Amino acid sequence: MSHERNLDYLNKRRIVYRRAPINDKPSEVYQWGGYYENGTYECYELFRSKAKITTYKSLKWHMLVLWYLNPQLDQDAFEHMFKYICYKRNGFVTFKVPDQLLSTMVYEVSMCDLDKPPKNKLRKIIFNEFCGLTPEEKMSIVGTLVGRSKKIHEDDIYQCMLDLHDMGKKITINRIAGLLNCSARTIHRNIGNQLKKEKELLNQEL
Image (cartoon, rainbow, N blue to C red; front, side, top):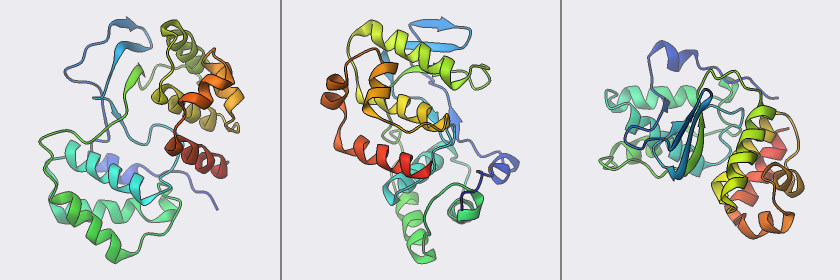
């Protein structure tokens, strides 16, 4: 059974889970957002798409980001928050996380040196949260701007995968290629094993 993600707990406690780039500036600014020609690693947008946390690796990355973005949290408050996130009925995860494993992961993350930001995906296109565009309109913009550079990156492919998932459409190589105005062969050449696994996990959620 699928559950809608419940963000009330995070919002009431003013937990930061999205942050726009701080130092990097867009090379082009539009009403809907910005285009970063060289990309930026500074954009964190947790829980923006409908995709859920499907692996322990993804869960730990979410932990690292939330720990980094919320320095006011102590370890107890951090663990309490992730008990909420890991309760399947709250709609964040697709699998059961044993309490002991969760406590171990929380401890490991809280001991991490976060002077440097957690590893993040490179983003070229960042939409304003309330830009009002439909997923179809966003995909059209992504295809136009990415196609302009004539070079497809894994992060461009991943963004298209998330957009297709949000529209409730099965993710296929041909659909991604159509969105990015390139050949299916180009997608096959640039999609790595990790993205292939993510593609299958996202399709299983539909």
